[in-house]
Image (cartoon, rainbow, N blue to C red):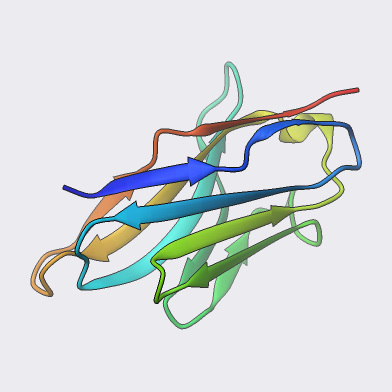
Length: 120
């Protein structure tokens, strides 16, 4: 079974930076799309950024120019560099990976979430 383990969340002041990491622990044939989503209290989960195996990226308008998503295919890891953080970035951040275990299947998996709090 695939486990996605996130790290890097925490408390940061407005204007600060954090870097989130997500590692997949399983024998995986290929990871097609990696992404980060977030859910603030009382709100629906929303897309933050995604990156394809080829490196194409998509960002939510609210984070463009401040967040950068990257991936290391060999290490099966995805990262989210978050700069110029704002209080409205406060949320639980979830890693998502759309992958194949055998080459004939494909499923999406979620991490357990990591809390990011932006506050002075």
